[in-house]
Length: 409
Image 1 (cartoon, rainbow, N blue to C red):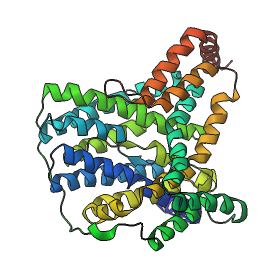
Image 2: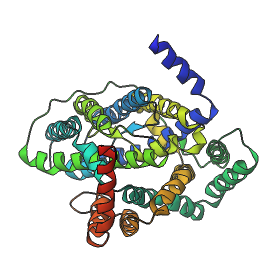
Image 3: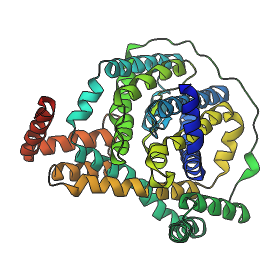
């Protein structure tokens, strides 16, 4: 009976708003990120079969994660994989065999599972001030908005038309999400102007390959620990911040636990990480997805498409390569506008943690990378150190408020 109610609720919320947001999120996640994995597999010396298996694992199990979390918690939580982790792995594959890398992936998932199961992730996220998290979100996500503008220089017709259509659609067409209209128009223009390169579109179905892991201390040190940090402090932290910015209460521990469980099994097929996805969650949680309580349906639609992309990766990847990159960049930037605006408001609306939020924003925008760990984590760490140095009173106030809430005062 409960299952029937859940299905009926989902059916009622699958409308043009949620489905279009899910489609846009899937296109974003199945284009640029897929090319990163393809490039990393090539530089790492993987075979075509191993590359397709890697793609199958991250997309299929990432889709399952998003589908499960969205339906269970009725929040627009998108599942995917760590793009930064893919870059990290691409640099490490020339130095380790694939079985050694997979052994390291398994250990990374066990680390994340342990931290999620003990509730330590929730404690850490509760301690980090919200303005700092929002500042980090703006800093990290701002590149999508910037790339949207620079895409106009690369292709004034495709990118410029998409932006203009988005603006006019926002003003005059209320029943259709403006991002969807912009996407349709830009794709049609690309087809008409012969911007799609279909010459390499070919493929054949192949089964994913199961790999037997081996364990190397050096691989574990080089891959397991950085991957665990990226999943917890970068990927899941972004998703948590985005959901908070849109008024949701994200299940941080559950996101880590279920992601690690699915990631453990996906590792045997070559998946480096399975986790929640900040940018796609931002698209699904945006105002374009309709009423707040129904936005989880956007993530459901995205998750189904994501999983299907994994199953049919051998067929679909050539079409991804054929799509003009400016379309992906422009549509992604347009889809991020709502999240950027709401995150900016939360980050700087209050008088507390303003310096910390500012440093989180600029460090996130800088794109710095130390020890193979990207800007999102350094934005959190650096801005907290800044706030502890010059905004200690704000921390004292935060702790006092939390203690009063716990005591019921």
